[in-house]
Image 1 (spheres, helix red, strand yellow):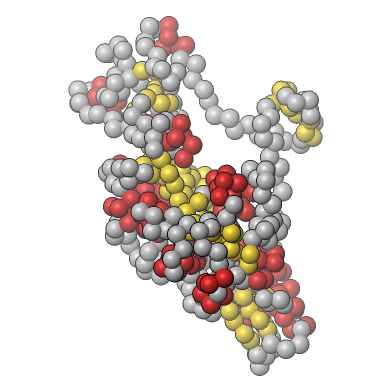
Image 2 (image 1 turned 90 degrees about the horizontal axis):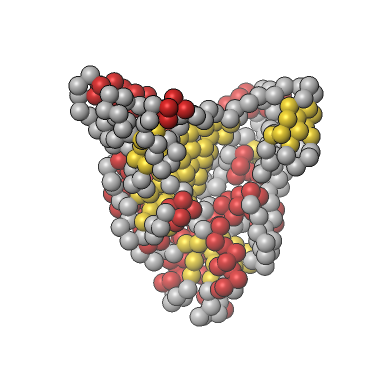
Length: 434
């Protein structure tokens, strides 16, 4: 949390010397106003010239970027072009497509006959440390277009977790349930977001399915990816969901699912993490506890599994299925997805506890933070307990008294730590990083 307040569902009415007025009557005190609203083409010159306007409100062009006047070509924000997923024309004001359209229009104006294949809307943005982007359609847009669409969510390390710099990539993959065709994706995180979007954009351009995506041979070495990185893992998850091998529920559909099925909700996370934040009414049971008490779980009752990110939920789902339980579902993306949905949109009937938000600043204060951690470690008696997971993992639950020092900061921490004879206990999520 960098202290940015969002005024959603409101518009600007007026700008005065020291404040702005919003359409709901409220005011915001200001020292500086930055407008970043884009440019909407008026198309007045085109209209005066009698050029045809398309159904999306942009200048109508053919596949060679030619307008209704054979002597005039158009490209960029003013033109509407074919959407590769929807199959209809849209206005897509993005710099990349505009530049490629301009090049193609110029070549065709000089006598070439090259066709523009269309846009999929691949875009990415960075805000402070966070990166987010999308390609193709989101799930709502796909369903609104009449497509038989579904989606899965994964939160997978940007590269092998034991190598420094690893961060979770949150990836939603949208696909057609019958044809398995890729329809779109959204991704968010801090590292490697553009890379995954580019892979999926390329796969969509080649009309690949989720089966093709699962087998995609992508570059791997510990600093760059995992053997099964976010893209492969999302495809695996989609395959498992479609085949009913591991059916999942999206966080956005959770409330409807709970009201209809009244499931037994089992939270598989560790007790410390569960104690920090949980879904009210859920039961905190480990995989081992479930395995030893299968005879006590009611048969014929829907079961919802909640894990950190959905991965352990899949493992336990298969265990329960193998034990004869028929109606078992995994929460897609785990508690991470549910908590984010609760924070951003909210649930009407579900009580989902939110995790604490870390206050941040654009100023660099890393060094002082490291010194404070060292002082804290020295001040306590007994062994130093180091948690080398990421700050996000640490915030979701940690051993009492543990100090969070990620792998990226560990060397600097060790240099500043003076008591070299002090006993140190290191732990992480699975043991790989520690």
